[in-house]
Amino acid sequence: MANITLTWMMDQMASVGVEFFAPSVLRMISQQRQQYEIKAEQVAARTRKAPPQWAVGTIFDANAPVRPWSMGALQKPRSAIDWITGKTARTPGQYRRIDPATGDSRHGPFLLDTNERIHSSARVRLACRGLGINDDGDWTAPTLAAWRLRRTTTRFADPVPRDPLWDPANHEKVPAAAATAAEEWGRKPNEEEGERWIWEYAGPEEQAPTEKRQRVLVEEPLGPYERFLLNQVGGTPNVYVFAEGGDMCDRASRNEGREQDSETETDMPAAK
Image (cartoon, rainbow, N blue to C red; front, side, top):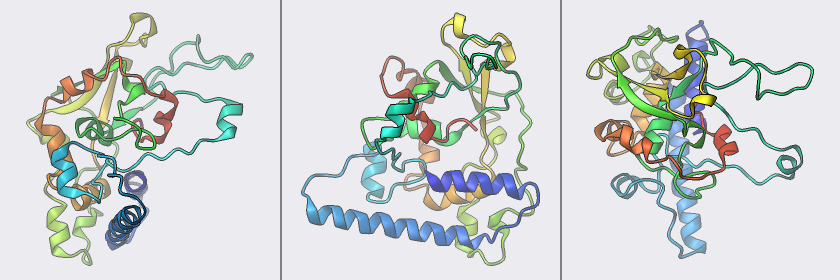
């Protein structure tokens, strides 16, 4: 999951002129694969217990021990500091103005134009039945429980260019095979059958954002570095393609009513 966050930040910075050495992403990927394999050997040497199945059988059986894109472990060690100071759950699309006198953020007016977007790794992890915090049960995107997925043909302005000159696949020192793979999936959201994914608010009306436009959270398209990472570590079958192949709206709606510690959502790059 850290690599997804890293490449997201690389895309944001590259879009304003910061340069990166593209082949460094391939080195990072190679090191990660080695870590997965070494860890699997170490675990097998000290226990006969089967490792947790971190995805649906089709993906798990074909890729283990290497976890593909968005299937990585969400680690959160227990902390006494958390117990003392408490936790705050994320509320995508529902943040309110804080009362400067009391610090209360529950009753003020909703913030407008927060520029929140949902990362596609959240949708893919749901579709592939990735695991929750510390590999405990299925991940259910608890802080998105009041939101429902659907496709739309509506056009949205995206912050990162889709085909910039700095696309890592175009770097002269990126091997041809890696560059070709980076063109296959997650390419252009509005050209995938003319539609893209959005999350619409479907929770209690009394908790709904007052502005209608605030009741839609757009899935942010993958930037060039993110696509490059996805297409090197997407697995077999590619998890992004797998998530597109089923009825994702139904899969997401089945999460309603399933309980999970919502504070732990802060470990998942769902809202950007």
